[in-house]
Length: 381
Ligand code: FAD
Image 1 (cartoon, rainbow, N blue to C red):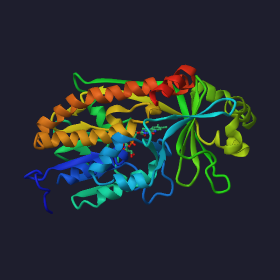
Image 2: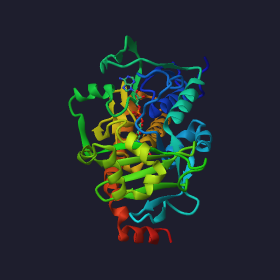
Image 3: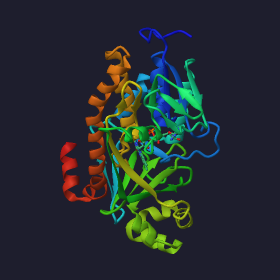
Image 4: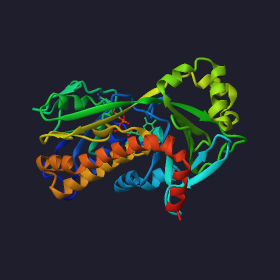
């Protein structure tokens, strides 16, 4: 196999643990540099799976994430499969809808299908001859001294932990001195509901991120290519638990989201509310992101954030691009690259985590206030 120009003189093995969004993209970055890349994913190959479980059905892709996709030649393809959202659309209790643009005219974020994005990134990684994807391979443990990973035993020069918020790679970090770690579960959970098309068309205006802010809780909806919307209800767990019958679901929606009832449908609401329990949301901050020259954390493994800023995946994608730039700067010398990555990246990722926590309140409460609407109006003049 040929090495990429400027690539390592002796090909090193990079093990990417986790084939989710960040892991699959990261495999492309390392492969492009000419490393021998082995990706290990605990799930089966989602491209063959009948049901794909993920942390949300769709998500918002923004500038950060797009820049990283562009770097591996994937931006156009993914953008063409996304739905632009130019503004938030605020639904008030009386059914009135008011748009608040995200930026200047022509600027937008995109609603993308998580499973499809993950599949496309895995396929892109696989096109590099120096990349091998291994599915049904769950990392049990690894040694920071030798770089030996226990699936069966696999060894690599660099281990890249992209194995999500509950990272098995990160466990080794916790055993080491001077590793800072904190995790916070917020009192809210989330539940996804589907709003079907009406007469083959979107039930609401498609190019918006719809928000029903109700102070202590809220619902949002992002459009999908099949003309459905995925509605996500964010609410304290104890409120979810108070609702125990189909009639109570309707009563609750009647009180807080009356305009959504005919669009989701009474029967669907009564059924889908009880399909799955509400899911928890965790914010993880840690530092450093590396151990010696052996291992580095990226994506949710390094910084799981609450989803209210729509930047978890985007920040994870940006990790890949920042790491790649540092690789260039330090001539792929892992012993210099890894500490520099920690130095540069920790403050930015921690800032994203803080902003996401701030937006947790902003979206459900401030977005509701006259002051907020006035300020947004001024911002957009
Ligand atoms: P993950 O997507 O969690 O992938 C980790 C992978 O590692 C998985 O495939 C898992 O199977 C695998 N794995 C785990 N353990 C092991 C092991 N031991 N061995 C091998 N493999 C393993 N972000 C945005 O940017 N925009 C949004 O709009 C947005 N919306 C969101 C909405 C919700 C409700 C939630 C919960 C999150 C949202 N996010 C959003 C955040 C986004 O989902 C995450 O930031 C993103 O999935 C992180 O990608 P990742 O690859 O780091 O982790």
